[in-house]
Image (tube, one colour):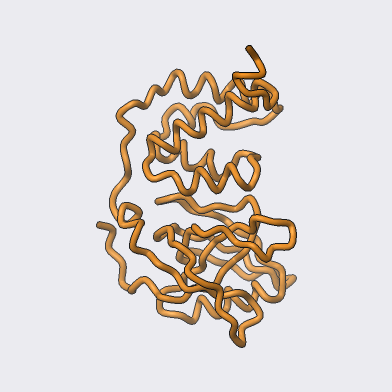
Length: 212
């Protein structure tokens, strides 16, 4: 288990942001500029756990939130001359959102159930069916097709968990796809889902049935 000097809180401040997911044992850089979220960062920094729950909205209004989010601890921050905060969240654990609480804070807060995600508190996961050359070949074809760039030397040297989780966070996938990747129970399931999404995109969004 990873050592920590704080208990997982029952209530978390929620940063509601489409396309932003925090995978197990990953870090997420954030540029904070909205007044309500600036207040959230300041309040989190004063708390014992310094944690923020990242969660995606599932509709354009932002009123329907995903049931699964991921909490990170502020592990680095800097205040900019224009008042913005640049922060880095180090993932602690995913959580199940039990309810959104009304309160005096200008930002949303939620009741968190941590019980389904003990694996997040352990060491790195392995993927018994990992095939690095196959995965990297698929990734290269996807990146070329969508005119995206990456550090291929770093990608080849990265551990499977770091590579898969980083891509799940960084690639321009839609909200529902990112949510499915976040909710995958194991690294192998997440890698398999990510491969399927990349293959789907390379077919131009057509399913196997359409292609036949």
